[in-house]
Length: 65
Image (cartoon, rainbow, N blue to C red; front, side, top):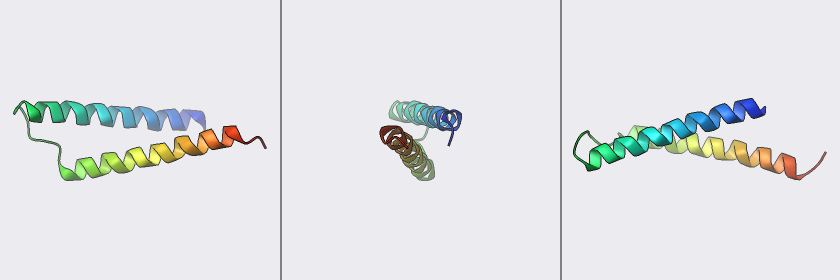
């Protein structure tokens, strides 16, 4: 996996987090409905995947070949 691919996935995850936060704040203010359960599950799965990718990159850098 290239750094560019990882950075793109991190950026997408960041965008998903921002959307989730804004949607949740709007729901708390009674402006919009809360995020759908499916959205929450998808965001959680996306974050797990990015965390695994970042962990793999860090471990690869930790142990020289």
